[in-house]
Image (cartoon, rainbow, N blue to C red; front, side):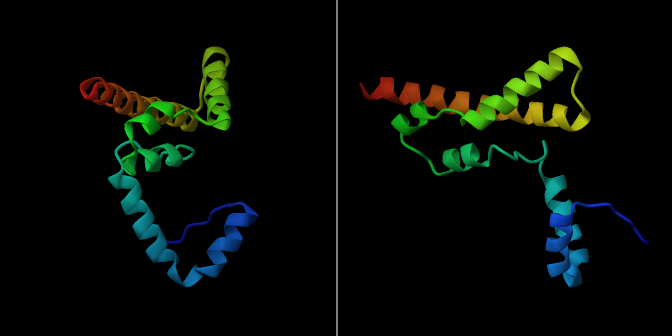
Length: 118
């Protein structure tokens, strides 16, 4: 099968460096994409990596979203209220909601640990 794609120049440059491995890249990329039930968490990897590092109770309670993330979420909320979200934006919105849920759970458990220690 032959597939033609229009891709940005920056991505094209990166692909050219690995053109002999393109089939393998597509195979593993699709496998990883299918393995993630809700897609990727682009923009939230810092939060997820932070939680995966098993931070202290105090570190968890100090965790806040970056200003950029706050702006992105505010923009999605505004667009959702006015013109509606595209399919990609809706997926991003659901990912942000899921990540917020994880952070809330981590903070709730941190508070419980803190109260238990006192």
